[in-house]
Length: 81
Image (cartoon, rainbow, N blue to C red):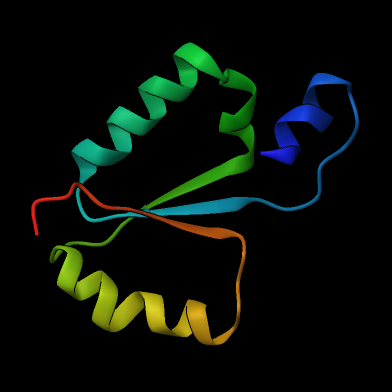
């Protein structure tokens, strides 16, 4: 992420990235990975859990973000579907 480079050189970064996930375990895995490899990014990320699985994310939550052409939202899926 370009934001990581700005953090490394001490420049301010505007805004947050939101990571959507279909389960709490996926969020915890992502947080632990970031803590181990890029802890400075944790301050730039907001994690949101939406129950119901990938189909709920695809059908209800992602379309509005897509319609708004948001580039600050990432969707983390566990790959079971």
